[in-house]
Structures are given as C-alpha cells and as structure tokens.
Length: 463
Image 1: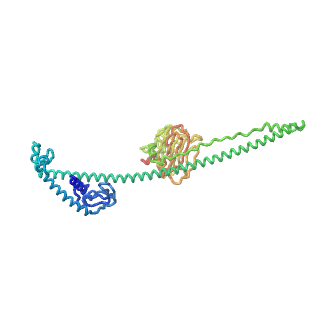
Image 2 (image 1 turned 120 degrees about the horizontal axis):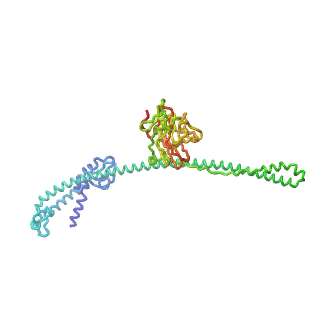
C-alpha cells in the first residue's frame, strides 16, 4: 500500500498543473514551477506585458522558461512504473472469491469477478477492456473540458492581475493629486494666516499709538491741574488787593478746565475664507445650475433660448415694461434667488473688454433711475477701461497676474462672504465680507461690446 501511495504521489509531481496530464516537453519558469511547453505558451498567449505563474501568480516581465531534460527523464521512468502498476492491477484478484477481476458493473461503478455478478443482478455488467475503453474516452472528454476551464480561469486571473496593477497606478495618481491639493491648500492657509497676523499687528500699532497719545494728553492735563492748584494755594494767602487783582482770570481757568476723554478700543474681527475650488468634490457639492431671467434684461440685451448666454445689441428691441427690468445699465439677473446656504457657479467672460459678474440684492432701487449714493447693493468683480475692480460699497482696484477668461462665484450666505476665483487655475481673486438679510441673485453687467457672457462651462450664444 505504501509503494502504491508513493507511486501516486510521484505521478502527481510529474503532471502539468494546466492540462493535468504527464508533462510533455517540460519547461521550468523562474518561480520554479514546471509546465508542458505548449501549455504555458498557450496560457501566456494573449497576455500583454506581464506573465504570471498559473500556480503561484508570481509575475515576470518576459515569456521566459527553460527546458528541463532531467525532469523529462524522470517522467519517462514514472510512465514505466505506471504501466507496470497497471499490469499488476489487471491481474488483481477478487478479495471475496479469489477470482480474476475481469468485469465492471456500470450501475455501481465497481470492478467485479464472475462470481460477483450474482450480487449485481439486473445491472449493466461488461468486460473490463470494453468498460475501460468507454471510461477512458469519457475521461478524455472531461479532461479537454477541464483544460478549457483552467485556461479560461487563468485568463480571468490574469485580467484580475492587470486590474490590480491598474488599481495601484490609480491609487498612486490619486494620492499624488490629493497631496498636491492639500499642499496648495496649506499654502493658501499660510498666506491667509500671514495676512491676518500682519493686519492684526498693524492694528495693534495704531491702537498703541492712539493710547500713548491719550496718555500724553492726560499727563499734560495733570500738569495743568497741579499748576492751577499751586496758584490757587498761593493766591489764597495773599493780601486782599493782590488776591482780588487777578482772581477773574484764575476763576475762568479753573471753571473752563475739562479732563480729556478716555480712549477706548475694539479689535476688528478679522476673518479669512478657505477657497472652495481646491477640490472638485466641493465644486460639485455647491454648484448651481444658474439661468438668466429675460424679464430683468436691459432692452439692449439678447438672452439665448437656453437662458445661459446674453449679448449686447446696438438696436434696442421692444420689450414689455415691468418693475424688474433694468433700463439704466446693460444688466441681467439670474432666475435663482438665494436666501441662505452655500452656492457656486461660473461665468465665461472670454475676451470681453467690459463686464461685471457677481451678486446683488433682489430689490434694487436703482434698476430704472440708475445708482444713487448709499444705495449700492452689488458685490461684483468687473473689468472696465482695462482695469479690474471689485465693485461694492467701496470699490477696490485689483492687480491680477493673469487675465481670467472664466470667473467662479462662491456665496456663503450665513458666513457673509462672496468670493471670486479664476476658473483656469482656481486662484483666489477677491472676497467681500458683509451681513446679508435680503434675497441675493446672480448679477451680470454685459458691457457694450458684442461678445457674450455665458453662465456655466459654455452654452448657446445669443445671436
């Protein structure tokens, strides 16, 4: 029994892991596993670039294998032992009747002798050679099907291996992108911190100077009071004539003496805004599909059918009169109104020579008669006469390093911030800080050149 088991183990070692038959023209690959030359060639046939071992999945860059002649000789010897073992098995005797096992019961799939057939009445029993031929052919059909399954699974595993490589590459790229985004974000935060600290230090110097000046004023006042006190003490012991001769001037100075006001201070609440454009996820989370409201458009403005684009035309068109329409400036508002939350949208300005985009209060008193002092409720970024300016309660000139072709507008209603960004490089341009209480609407001042303004990444231009 031990010899039989050893022979079976030896036979298993010299069988190909792919076709499961005795190795034919055996070859060895770098990881040490052995295969039929034709089997490993077929397994690697359609694989580009990386060639994993079908057993251990160890990858290699080339289709490299080497012939194993020593293993081929061992296979020949194993085949001889296998044939000898089969010959001995063919002469095996029935353990119950001590007769030659020369028949096979197809119903019970058992090898039997002539005397055993009495126990297999009604079963299909046929000669050993006939049954062996039939089952050998049947097993051969199984073997071909199993070979195909092994080849198919090997291809699937190879596909999974490629996906693992792609996964590592994508994760590495995502890791690099995240690191780059966080580095830029850290740089922005450091810049904001430096600016806020600088403003705080400047404010501290100004307050210190005012407090020091106030202390000097109090010191001078104390000195004046002490001088009057000495003069009053000296005059009060003089003779009647000397006391009364200058008493009017002394009384006037004592009565008109007033202490200086106490100086107080209050530090400004400095804040900063983290840019929302450093992450596409944040953009998508707060992005608004803004459309234009033709009912608010100046008569010289033509709004596209999809309400995404607006163009200035020289000839005014006849439009219905309404209280929402702008007539003093070439302005159109967005159809959406914001009373809270965070919102982001983009306006493509292209090469226009004049424009302004941002937000304004829905109820503007200057839609018809023009802007009046103290009534400005716009927060916009604009280009006029070749200069960029932040248009608000107090216009702020801006020096931009690059000409933006698209402007991102970000509103944080509760925080009281409206920020503007260059869509091209996500750079921060300007931030307004305000306390909002009205409904705010997107604001577009088109200018008087024929180039359009477009909301979003693009759209149908007005014609």
